[in-house]
Amino acid sequence: MEACGEEGQLKLLGATRSPFLVRVRIALALKGIDYEFIEEDFQNKSQLLLQSNPVHKMIPVLIHNGKPVCESMIIVQYIDEAWYSKAPNLMSKDPYDRAIARFWSAFVDDKIVPCLRGVLNGQGEQQQKAAEESVANFLLLEEALQTNGKTYFGGDEIGLVDISLGGIVVFIKTMEKVTNIVLIDTDKMPLLSAWAERFYKADGLKDVLSDPAEIFEFITGWRAKLTSPPAGN
Image 1: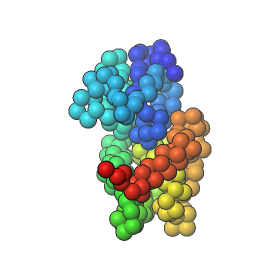
Image 2: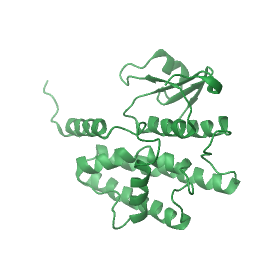
Image 3: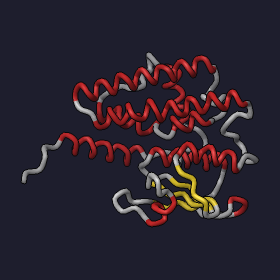
Image 4: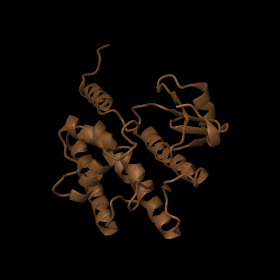
């Protein structure tokens, strides 16, 4: 999509298979914001990316009128604040509710994402331990949904926490298939399972969520590399 209108010049740097890019695309889609997407190559990063994110040199990066914003959930919050007049609002006006949303969003990145990496990269007992930790963390999110009593973590509409977790939902589902490890058990986590299905089918998100076939190919290839014997000298 090309940037136009009140958005000004808006560019998004990323890679389509990145779940962190998906978070940003979800926020932009919900707000109905147009932008120019620039695909980045992990093996050959562009000068624009290196200049825009000189600290981590990672995607995604949102460039708004020449000013870069880095880190997926910081970008999502920036989008909500910069285009606050555009519905829906991704964060509550209530300071306490905003604090709680930031807490659970950080929980996803600090607790769940590292465990998922452990499942993706681990073997044997190491992988099993990462899977068990993942399940324990998902159970905490199940409890949060139960306490919330709403359709989404953000209430009746998709909010910050939903985007944080929703950006990686295709990755989670696909990793379960590839590894034959159940991370979100329908019986143990009925609310979280229903949330995942609901989020996956939410209006306007189909075109911005990760392609399951592409993610399946990536995870399968990655796991194959991990289990391949080292090349000889």
